[in-house]
Length: 385
Image (tube, rainbow, N blue to C red):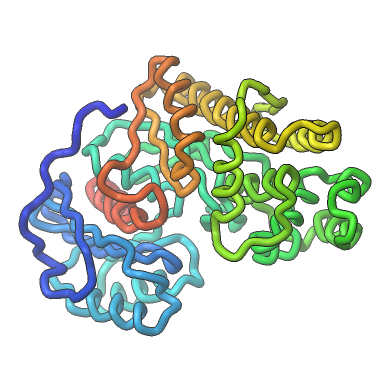
């Protein structure tokens, strides 16, 4: 699965010693002895500090919106000295971004903002000390995109501190904004884009109103793989609402484990405005028809996983061939889904590509700070920051 195992971690923690309740993973990193503090993201905040040839990445400290977590993170950062730069997420409104900006201003250091999915892929590259270009699939619920929209189903070409968006899931409306992540049926309406079809499933729901929101120019757009899972879960399992991020996707994976995934649904992968766009609109309508015809939920869930894995592998294989790279990175919370992950890996390896997945840090946002620090180092090496 990987070109080589990561080197042994450092037995000594230089920066986090004595910090109560913070578990640290130390990884060797080619940093030219540059010291970077990276502040991660908010909901699953972790920190990373580099120096002495190592990157020290904390495991998830907590939700930085919690005052106690915020205070702990701020204390660690304010005690850090000898830095060359501070790295953070691209989103301007995160507490972690504001903390990074305050630290960089106080110390008179460069502030390097790193796009969320670039950081996801970079974290895996850092773990395996890969500095040659890769193609990465970063699949999760949300990350602030360079165009200001909500990204989350990304195929990126990463060359050190720079990246290009080689492909992505089709952007669809996110009716009601954050409300759509709590009520998956809204995302089903957005993907189906047909009030007549949606009404066949969601009888007691205000489908017409949600469709109007989808058609409004003021409604935000998303390419999120997490929201795609939500939509399918609403259609196949009848999920109307969720209480935590990833709940609908977890349920869908559990049901899929009891079915056969040999039914491949339709997807479209086409070139659009300089990158590949992956469209599952027709698949959504096929799922509705199959469900109403009496097809089992297990079979439909398994078929969805098979289709998504094939589509993601297709996008990565085409992108890798176009860019002439041999490594494909898998990152982001959606790859906590073992069924999806194993199928994507199998197809990529069958195509002759070498697949990299994190071994010491989580697939999700807990690894973001490491990726931010690694990107900052690459940019400083090239003189880009």
